[in-house]
Image 1 (cartoon, rainbow, N blue to C red):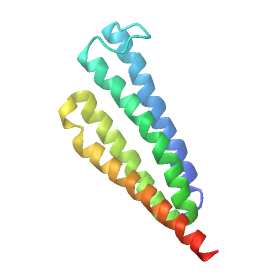
Image 2 (image 1 turned 90 degrees about the horizontal axis):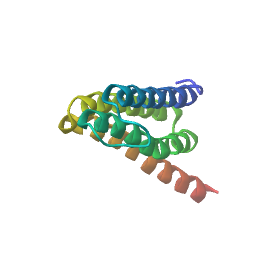
Image 3 (image 1 turned 120 degrees about the horizontal axis):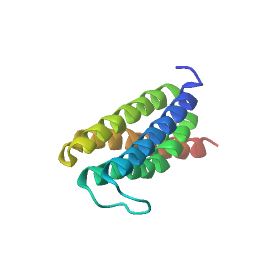
Image 4 (image 1 turned 60 degrees about the vertical axis):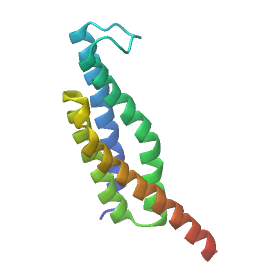
Length: 131
């Protein structure tokens, strides 16, 4: 894997987040939910939760991927980062359709970020032990 792949995945994850935010704006218009309200129509609320949940996961995903890249493997960080993005898109589509079907996408994205975080911690501890 190229050293640029984690940077590209960072940009793609941010583009995905912007797309989710734009979906919220469209849903506000469609369901006539004026800001700052975040409730009103179940479909709007699911679209809003997709955006908010993704923002919450970005705060864990991005540093974990970069630390894993630095201390473990660029290649595996890239694979896991791509899996996380694909799983979040899957999650977003299913959650927007019907809240009860979001589980598989959430589970896969959570697994990817958990591996990145735990791997980064192990890699950092190993680096500290070597020095």
